[in-house]
Figure 1 (tube, helix red, strand yellow):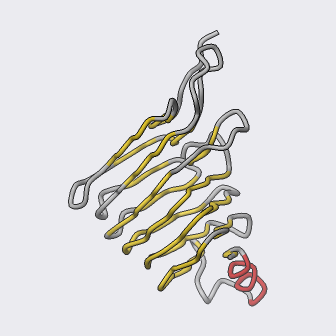
Figure 2 (cartoon, rainbow, N blue to C red):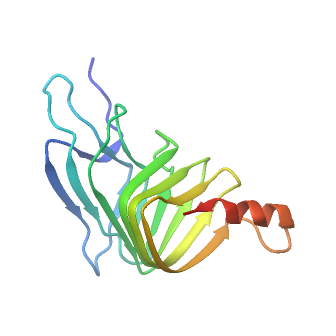
Figure 3 (cartoon, rainbow, N blue to C red):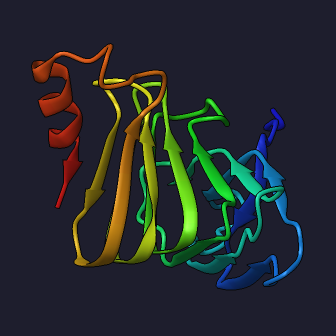
Length: 173
């Protein structure tokens, strides 16, 4: 009857959650989930801000709304070689953020995952795709200044022209 929560952060009830600070190591292992308690009737809306900063900082997990609901805001700023390892929580294959800011950060997408930025993507950083089944989408405003795109484990010597084209298609505006 009780649920096992595998989330690093669970947002609900009109909460505001801020994790991380510039210049400090932040390591989150698990998903960021918007959910609600069906018996208590709490609201799913929350504002969550996550700021992994520096190469020792990371978020290993997905960001999503549970129970087929629409969550409110997740602002994710990844700075100074910090990495968001999407699909390391393994509970779902898709992640949604409202705003994504890259200040030299990395988004590592693997395991058949789609990462969608709903409102705005900005800054400069790296998108590392694990395979032809991984996608990065910007549905809102695309203010990315510079983006390095890699396919994990692939080099120009090992990729065919078709594979390179497919990797480029996986970055959709």
